[in-house]
Amino acid sequence: MALGMIVFTLILPALPAAALDVVKIGLNYPETGPYAKQGLDQRRAADMAVEEINAGGGIMGKKVQLVYRDTKSNPEIAKANALELFDAEGVPMIFGGSSSAVAIETGDVALKKNRLFFGTLTYSTETTGEYGHRHIFRECYDAYSAGKVLSAHLQKTFPGKKYFYITSDYTWGWTTTSVIRSFTATKDTNAHPEVLTPLGTQDYSKALAQARDSKAQVLILSLFGRDMEVAVKQAYEMGLKSKMQIIVPSLNDDMAQGAGPEAMQGIIGTLPWMWSVPVVYNYPKGNAFVKMFEAKYQRYPTTSGASAYVILNQYKEAVERAKTFETKAVIKALEGHKYVGVKDEQYWRAWDHQSVQTVYLVRCKAADVVKKSKYQQDYFEILGLMKGEEAAVDNKEWSEIRDMVGMKSALDEYQATK
Image (cartoon, rainbow, N blue to C red):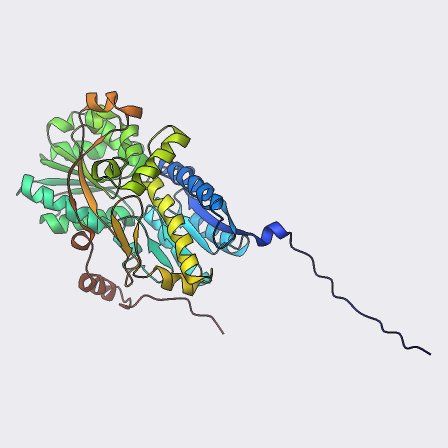
């Protein structure tokens, strides 16, 4: 009698082949809220980068699929988005921002989940300073670099003058004003007054009236996005531009367009990048990016779009150097790495994960020049630049700042719980 065998087969649900060939990446950005314009440019440039990456075979043979979430520039919403992107969508990396509070919160989730976060538009020094760790990288510049470059100019052109500060009341605004006060010797708040304003303020007339009545010669608007647009337009309407020099520490094209050429004329600030930088300095990769973006969207890219584009390409290259998507290996592949994105050479500094880079001092052009320019988007004249090593915070000061808040000088990394 033959013995029969019964074979038990465990049938597992099959994953579609396509799912195995895709890597999802999260874009946690402001689709709505006071920084929505900056968010839109991030998405546009990110979509373009993904098309380019996928046309070239993806990342290690996997096609990239972006998964979008709207932060509304709200840290709690950003945190919930990040948890969902990491846990439900399974993304190995999130990028985005336009609020440093959002970036810090998202970065904290990345640390706890052993994943990565890249900040596209997060200028507070705290992002890679007091709150820095090994799971967060900042591609843009920071308030320290912007403030140092700007203050060098102010010390030459407005020595001994009275300043008035209008500051957005959250981490980026605080650190921006603090850095400028330090570098311009205007720490005395009685001699150089300040008004704090909530993010998303709709009317700056009261704060601007205080600035006017103070008889200050320099007005620092530590404001960004729609907040800056509203304040600059109101300052123009109130005639403040004839009474004081207006300074906007961190500028970009879409903010300038929102305020308008008449209101922006003569305003001084800084930028980590603008579309004309590769044109003026003949940076081939930057010129190619500008032309591709222009062909696709019929306008020039802005700072936030450029950063999003560079981040996706930098992540791709780091994964390919590491030969894995595993977080720790990708971090090692990034730390200390030099790269050329859309301007001159930058590098991911190993001890704080700041992208060290050139910073540009700019002044807004005359209104008639802007109006005659293509897309009415030629707003900024470059007054000067400072190389990244000179502009960026050094290790000694960075370590002292972290020590003051009880943080180690070495960056924390993910520790598995037992």
